[in-house]
Image (cartoon, rainbow, N blue to C red; front, side, top):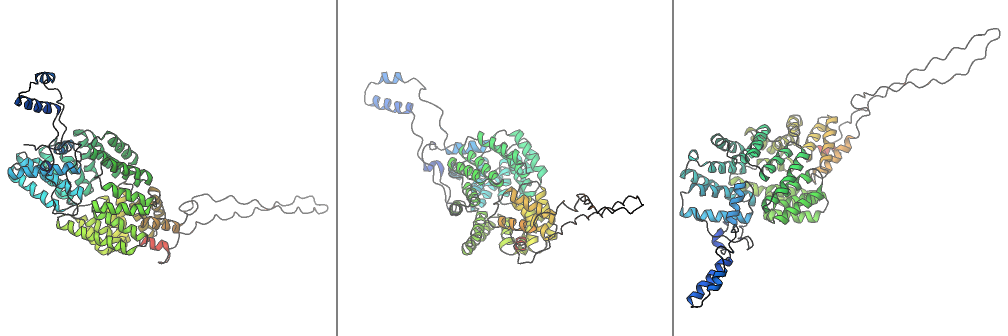
Length: 554
């Protein structure tokens, strides 16, 4: 395939389309940028040609320049960099991805039957939509990938288009379809490493930890380096192996060389720090990610989350606003709305919640299923029954991840069906993931069911894991824990042995009667004091108490 000349790495980046405008196409890559500057050899040759034309003898100068001198390896342009990142299984920068889309789009206009180019274009559209939060690109991705398969079927060696369709299905949260496409590729090309990342995402979305683990291990065997380390760190994170996740994520960050890849690794370290209740470390990692790649807008939202935990509220509000402008994801609108609500700014909170609904509706038109996020909003701020209905639909689609199980259990509790929700909440925590919100939800449900011992343990786990896991829920977790009070002395059933009986008080020795030399009777020991009875379990408080409110609040 012809490759258009690209700008050198030091020149200005090509313009990026606005994430808010679905009608703005990415820049046309090579057509919008100047060619690379001429090398020294080229400059001297041009001077030599001009001198000959003018009749000036420059033989000495020409001899002085040895053949090949000044020719070094050509610096890769944005298209080559994007292709290299894709080949390595790493993310490309947004500017390089823009150039790749423009280059392939221009090429297929004149080569409409080039199946590999169409597959690359479609996959790049998927990545652009994901990285820019612009779901309008998913339709373009689907069109390009279908055209690729029309030009060459997957069975005839066009597995790249199938992998692209799997990535598209994952992005739309259709994990069953992603699994089907991915396993089709794996069956035909079991050593094609590119299929395993999409399979990992599909299995994770379906809650199949065993398959996700096997796919991650296989990916690591086929593709060494930073991509495999990143996937392994995410696997450990999902299983609750925090130390292993941290060590692997650090190795990935140390070994990353490309800016986008490095920023992604630093972002992961920031998320791990925030989840274990270390917001200062989280801010430092997110700042490092943004310094490495200013286009890593997800780190703006991560930074905002950590700033909330540090009570740097004004900075957090500014960071959330910036993140939503550059990466309008509905989960950021939900987080910002809850922050406003925690500050008593109900009007601003309602504005964010309205924006969330608008984003979810736009995503639905583009084929993206945001039922999980919408249900989380409805359970705490809208209609819990609607949340239950949405999540039952997800469960019926085999979407049984820890996130769905937790959300369904909580929605059932909020809808007044705590006993039914208990099993789902236990399943979420039982996956091993160290998520403070999951532990909080389970603890509140158990408290509602008067299972006070487990409730206390899970609420303590939530507060210990991340004391500031939510601006709304974290204070309620502490209130619920305080209302439960301390556990009964001696644990359940008061298993401690009873205290020894008190020593008997000595009685005055009677005077001996005359002519009778008898000993006084020893006093009988007093009866042993009864062992203290166990403290009664805390009674269910009135609905108006803070603890009762905690059981009905996020």
